[in-house]
Length: 96
Image (tube, rainbow, N blue to C red; front, side, top):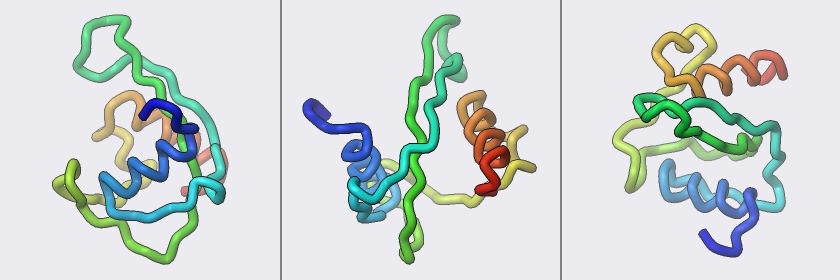
């Protein structure tokens, strides 16, 4: 939203999509992903920042999301290009 920092946007989106209340000041930005958007015309890009958050709460579908599924790097074949990139980078960082 206008005027938000990336961390504030991530915290807002986490609440809107999976009902997690996160403090933007405690989010750690890990990396950015830029890649071709899946199913979109050539040249349309996905650009996102990926953050690390710690919480004792479990994500649950909320508003914009119908279901939550845990994935591992073994699920990369089921993901769009941006998801594959995220999974690979998380493996490289030893987070999954």
